[in-house]
Image (tube, rainbow, N blue to C red):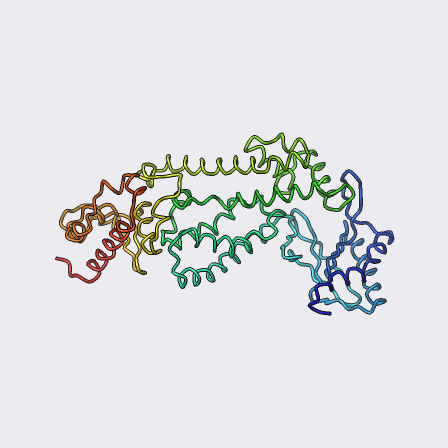
Length: 443
């Protein structure tokens, strides 16, 4: 019945007596001190079996019980895929700690993937986070083909593809592990936006997010986590999920616990950041449900304001605060090809490099400290992007042809009223400047 949708349930039924056997085996399980104290000996999901024990001796007893059970039921495990993870905060394992399945030794590993999530012996999810980011970046190679072949001209369509094809890979099971890695998870969107619009890698992400009217990935993680919290609160006392939650709440009051090891404590911190601690204090499913959107709106406002504050205090792009717009920018919502949108964004973010048609100019002011002067004109001016765009006499004829005026590019109203014709004029101006720079001999 391999491939049948009923197979996992049938296999679970076939092994249903194994839980009782473990519970009645006089072995120790993991104590979960929720509202109802309980011991957990085993986890079952389809044909995946996890044995839990507080000590090496107790775990070996459970392994022996399981091996006997499987032999009696004519089942054979895949020992090569069977592993031991010893959860601990630090320190090496004793060389005496060895585990046997009949005559075969079971390998002890530092991490193991269970139901798609990598669990590490530290009790943290650093490795899973890194793997998720790596896989999500790998998925970007697929969407580049779709974006390029589809010749999509509205950025929102490109963003929807990213949200549909990359974010689910990045945020799989993120309610369980993601809230300790909120800032790191933003790096995938950062990579996507910078590559999409050919922005330098060193572009501060707060500029890029504001320019594209994109919110942090962490807001989606918090949304998923809040909905998971609501799901937990719908469970009755005595269920494993609810008891585990209550145990974490109880442990959060002991000593000086760290939120990186306690999901409930981290969630409290997030709610406190937006003055919504009363929702946590209520421990009421109804109050949580009523306030999820309020919490998300407040957190979104907090994130956007943080980006605005960083922009206003930044010395790298002092002009940007004058043309920043918290509403979607007009040039991102009119019918412009990606390469045109990219050029306008590069100009607005105004770094000392500009890229078009897979060719780049990195201006002397950025990379040549010994001689930062422009080599294309005789003005002895520092060659930066402003000089290239508005002042270098080498491009005067092209500049006049397309009516490129510096005062427009520092005027927010110019961008708000930008037309398709003006967008193409900016692109054509840059394109012809590149051709002149690369083809024409300098005089």
